Image (tube, rainbow, N blue to C red; front, side, top):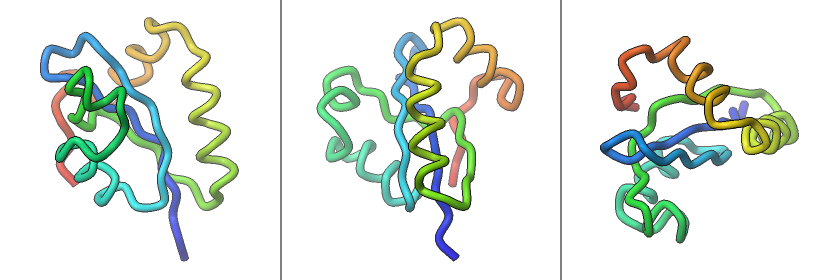
Length: 92
């Protein structure tokens, strides 16, 4: 069964956030790390995975991405810190 992911990346200094969704988290993170992810992540050097959620349906992951993109920055940081209080990069 295919899994879908909503994920949050940050830069090394933890000053910028990028939110996306994918059906292959490992491949997508590799794309970001090699500057093949998105123009935004390439421009701001946003390539460290700091948070993700797993879903059974593509629609759920897409919906969650849209929801998180509409949140204020403080809410996003609070969500991330619940599962990753030290804001360390997650290795997958």
